Amino acid sequence: MVFFGACVTENCPALVLCLCAMDGLTTDITTPKAATKKHKIPGYFGVLTALALLAGWAVYRLTLPETRHSKFGNLFHWPIDFRVYYRAGEALQQGDQLYAHGFVGALPFTYPPFAGALFRGLAFASEHTMAVAWQVASLLVLLLVIIAVLRERGYRMSPGLVVIAIVGLVASFNLSPVFGTIFFGQINIFLMGLVALDFLRGGRARGRGIFTGIAAGIKLTPIFFALAFFVERRWRAIVAVLATFAVTVGIGFWGVPDAGVFWTEKVLETNRIGEHANPGAQSLQSILLRMDIAHAKPLWAFGSLLIVVAFCIAARGAIRRGNLSLVMALGGVTAALISPFSWFHHWVYLVPLFFVLLDATLRPLQHLAKRISVRGRAGRGAAILVEQCGGFLAVAFWSVVFLPYASAVSYFPTSFHAQRLAVDNPWLRGMFVWAGIALVVGCAAYYLAAGLGRRGRNR
Image (cartoon, rainbow, N blue to C red; front, side, top):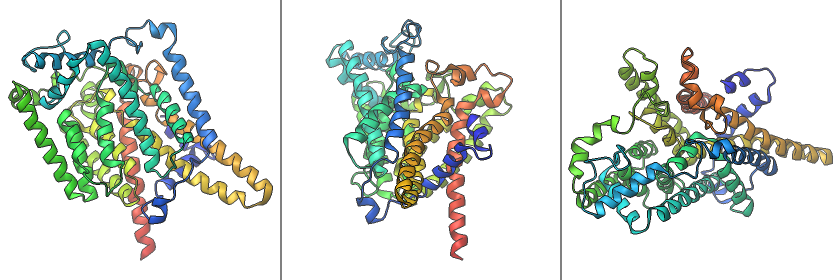
């Protein structure tokens, strides 16, 4: 991949940025002084300029005539998954069953009964009105998640931070998970917002685990975040997740006539969600099956175990340094990787991950600029240049790293649609998943090495 090729080039700026990011991951904000002192985003104008270019590219590509007239590119067409949600809620309002038939053609309702009970509320307004409200709310929640990540990373709430978040939101449409979530009217961003309420309010916030339990009741995958609480040793949060999830199951039985059908039959039928042969299926198991690898399912199980171990190592290191944003973002990526079936739009946690990694790169660049600034007037000028150029290059660097997740509209050559065409190159064919594994394992390797190094110095 471009990322690895750039990093091994001698005296390459990308290598410097990579090392800065790794150094930034060690920043400890758990001390009282660090926790209370908020600071501005380093290299603000450089970061804003780079994000604005990405946002401009996204708007340009999305408004091209060929995109607007494309069946799979126009974001203003009717979101088909939302239509399933709406009609499922409408059916329950009329006393119909939830799992007996499809709702848009053959498309079935694939979520737990609790989700269906919630979707009954959609039917109180017209389908068009609720679809518009759904899409606007999705964007608002994503914006709030970006702001919450920046705040959790210690940045001061200000108009400048909000501007960065808004421009970053528009730029995120270059990523296939965000594009796909809006295109289909999916629920992924709302689920991430619920999980964020547990992770981004702080480690000692009251009621942690409740919102994750609600998210798991709507869609089972977020139950994985209970493991993050286990690594954090937040036993009450684990109990809250499980208890809240149990309550959602009870509500589902109360509000959905055929709830038992889901828990006894449908929950294990992953083929109802989609086919592994579909290029949009992006989990480790789907990639292994599409590559026709012998013993794909045992390899998936073993590989998933290793990925979970890597996540636990990374999460433990991040928790010790107060980086709950990284724990949340890596948790979402890990859950998508190891799930029996994941659509590409399940990977919306890449958005907070991008901003966490960007923050990790900016922090040491800021320290470098401060050291340069003490060298008189020339030093102060050089410090400004280093900080602003560094901010621009940091955004550019991580944008290259995230190229495997580019939408086909924004940049087809690295999109998963193009990846499926690389039938003779398994690394390119599965680049979407391999890059995700590299991000999780890379963070784990760094924190493991940092921990061993600290022990060695203490001897």
